[in-house]
Length: 143
Image 1 (tube, one colour):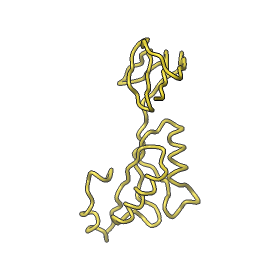
Image 2 (cartoon, helix red, strand yellow):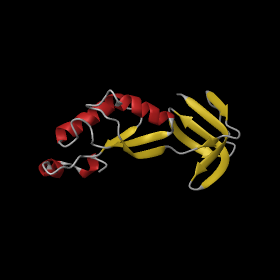
Image 3 (cartoon, helix red, strand yellow):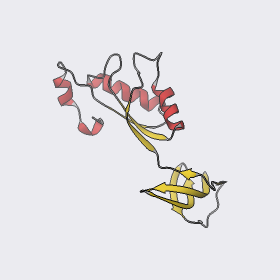
Image 4 (cartoon, helix red, strand yellow):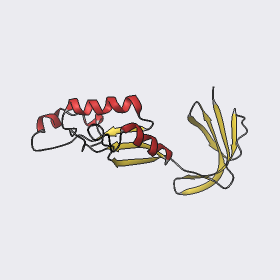
């Protein structure tokens, strides 16, 4: 089991900043508190550094499929994670736009294969795809 202990961080959460420790096991936050009585394989002192919650970006334009010379899901998700974004919601303005269940499923498959962040996609709406929109499970899209 991989364990990490982050000590003395300035933890930003729910509008407050408190100094404390974070214990992580197998990539998941397990415990937060002041001066935790724990040991870990990796221990880092974060004195003077802020620990922020992950950011959710609810409107991204990753351009895949169709415009991959501009960006791809992998490259943009990697950049997002480097900047603290843990989840993204991608707009349907790709080529072709995500106006059908098949095209939407393709985007999910692409993200499943390479995204480093959590993801969801918007279903595109046009004058010609009402049938496709009505087939969409609201739980499967972010909008």
